[in-house]
Length: 359
Image 1 (cartoon, rainbow, N blue to C red):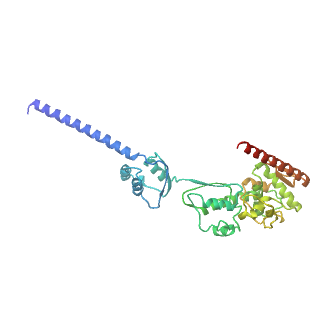
Image 2: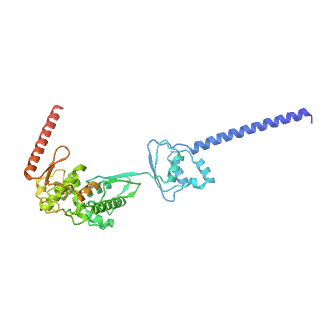
Image 3: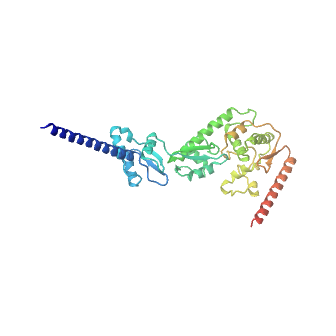
């Protein structure tokens, strides 16, 4: 073989080798690009979806669901990684938000961390147990237990296994977070234990001169204080009014207790017939405290009941400015009441005038 021929062959081999390397690089680049695209592909959805992964469900089943819904094209890149790292394909049971433009990789990481979708339920200060249960029964993603009786609070307390005769007052006002299909009884138990802790704290730190014999009486009075005012700075003085009346043997005469006694027929307007009807809760007709709380009091109302301000007031009426006017005598109280009614009448007349002028 001549030197020229050998040189020609070597040149051809070099060119073939170079071409082969170029092809391999190109294939590798394309393959890597396809891998990255598959690994980081985004879900094709317009609105976020709540996806529930059931116990025992595999990544392949989740992937199949995504493909059937036409949210993604494939999962081969993740399956390839899973061959070398099986933990990569591990999924946790639960309900997770899948958001528009979210990558399958991001969603899988969220599932592996167990970052389930969170929902919230708020027990509002002063809402009674009937209101709380009704709201719970209509809360999405919360499973309302069949044994909960929305109209019989004693039966519900027994069904929940609580060592109380009635759940009223024992639901701590707060916002509670939960995951999909959480049972309402679980949320109620959390609220119950929180309120027990708050009540215990208030009772242990109470002014021992207050005329109460038990934590339950404290809870009951706090619920009345809660319904009478949402102004935190007033609660202590309102508590003093009730204690002054109790110490003197006067009836509490508070409208919220009357309303609670006729709750299932109450239409939003207290009437004279309600004030005359003798129920266990009508403090215009009974002496002392009603038999149970009438609402779920806040920590502030519990502390106000435990440590009232000192005052000589026996009466209070709405001031029309968001607070109350307090009085020592009935004469002063009637004067404040007339002023309030006059103000209300004036406001109503002005509203009617404005309404007529806008027509």
